[in-house]
Image (tube, rainbow, N blue to C red):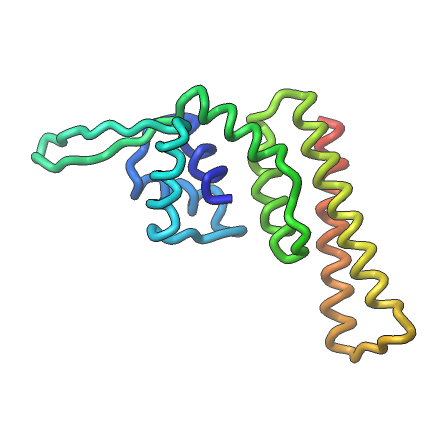
Length: 169
């Protein structure tokens, strides 16, 4: 997911690693908080793949800064990452779906539909699993687990509603 975030924030301008981190936090703080220790290796991977390029620029004060920019290959990779299927991990799905839905404006109309279908089908699957846990007579749950599961069902329902709302845009 870190590669997707980096590529997305580089769409509009070249940024330093510090600015990439700041822009990710500005846009996605509600879903993720990557460290510099995660961003630096991701930048290296993306540059090796040809998805981004770096340029060293000397500031007026004599400080060397490295600016990163997205390439055509990076645009293709961003599209691929947005359309990639989700993990089976329900906890990771919620944050990944939120990030991908936040980036949907990058995609053309056909690809938006593909991504919305992925979000909706995965959210439905996870919602059904949570509902089945709630209603499993062979595995009784206590009130605390019931409250958390009810909330989880609501989160999946909300993602489904968001996806359905985006179909209409």
